[in-house]
Length: 222
Ligand code: G6P
Ligand code: MG
Image 1 (tube, protein in one colour):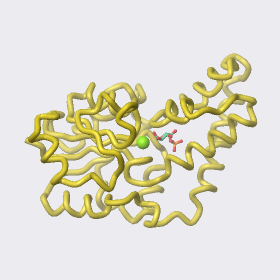
Image 2 (cartoon, protein in one colour):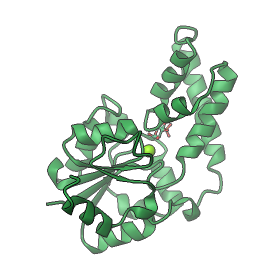
Image 3 (cartoon, protein in one colour):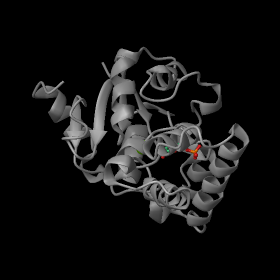
Image 4 (cartoon, protein in one colour):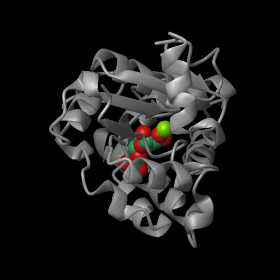
């Protein structure tokens, strides 16, 4: 019996994942690390410092910089990212999400946010969606990033719900793994080949409706 929904932010609620990608791509170029679609996918859902580590590792440069230098590069990426978000408003909300949130509220589902992004309060505010997500997991409190189940487990806890009562929604492979590890029902948004571990898959957010979710659960996909 589903009572709550735990949302990822970037790439699920808003199209910000393309800006994360752009900003990392720029930094990778500066560091002389070859950018690829695979790397872009692997970075989805990964925390800021872990993302930098992954980029350095991809280029075989993980031992080339001090912690201080790494922090400076991560800060630079974030400045760049925030520049790309300048002027962001509700038009950045992905198709169907506003209606879906309204419908969830109407049916009294509880909502929480399980984003790894430290920018999520700012992003939600710009989008005008902060009121829907009073309950959030603070990524600063986490011991482990996605794919560890910790963040989605907390997403259910902040709602006072059991994991089995929650559906988690993600666009990242590591995010789907986190939801599954937390024993929630997982919805993957995007390429089913990449998100094949999701209980339910939708190509894009426009398909994300209570009707479609109910149908998917009835046909025993879950
Ligand atoms: C989300 C995004 C990632 C991003 C991470 C940290 O998980 O999908 O692309 O690296 O948040 O975001 P932050 O805004 O804290 O750098
Ligand atoms: Mg995401």
